[in-house]
Length: 104
Image (cartoon, rainbow, N blue to C red; front, side):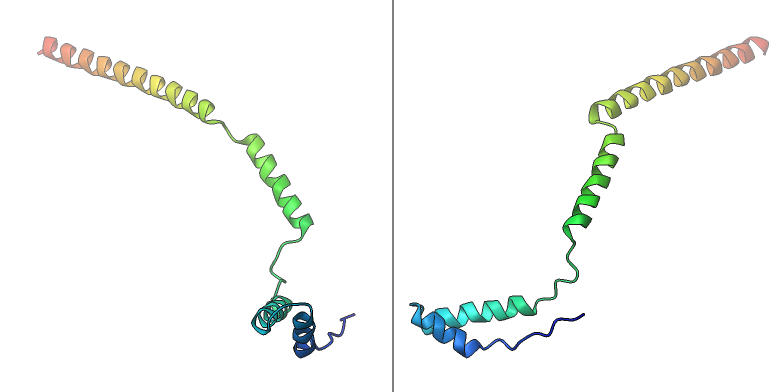
């Protein structure tokens, strides 16, 4: 059920602020800010539950992520493996070339 909004009497509230010691300009700025904040659309904001659920999902993702040290170690292993294959391939080609030269 939608709650009916009452009209906000800015004139009355400005006068009350002036009676409390604010000057006309200060009171007007305060009331203007209140009116603008009341009229602001907050429907796009997340609820606390949505934020908590998102934090939980992020935490779960972070648990499965590799650290920089783990990535560095994996890269070093891959580089070593690649270097071994390159040296082995170069030796195989050198052997083929030497065999071809001897055969000629």
